Image 1 (tube, helix red, strand yellow):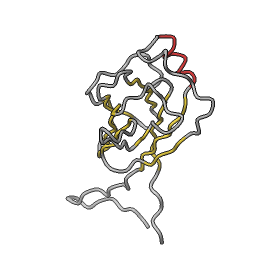
Image 2 (tube, rainbow, N blue to C red):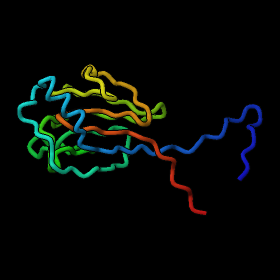
Image 3 (spheres, rainbow, N blue to C red):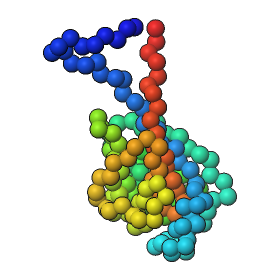
Length: 157
């Protein structure tokens, strides 16, 4: 299909939306930094012997990151309470928001905080921070989540 320049007054063609994907890993480098700075839960956090990488396609506009709690009625979209669970992750740790402008992360006031791209500086609680494809957020004692865009799947012919 040929794409032609819009005629004056017509809106430009809208490119197809991208798909955001979160890849969750156990990050030894981040864990070592948490232990070195003696974070709030550092004495309770152990690095897992095995943690399979998880890939989650993000759906919707608001994605809760945390650990499931039946008593609190919390069912995070990205549940980090699946064994082996990172004890440093709060039940409602952070919120990812997706809109036409891209993706943001907001720490919800978690005990251990959230940092970005290897920084030891925690982002301020309850402040939306923009992310780009390829950015990494670090939370808990050893969890890193990489957010990336993928092109949309081709439409059937």
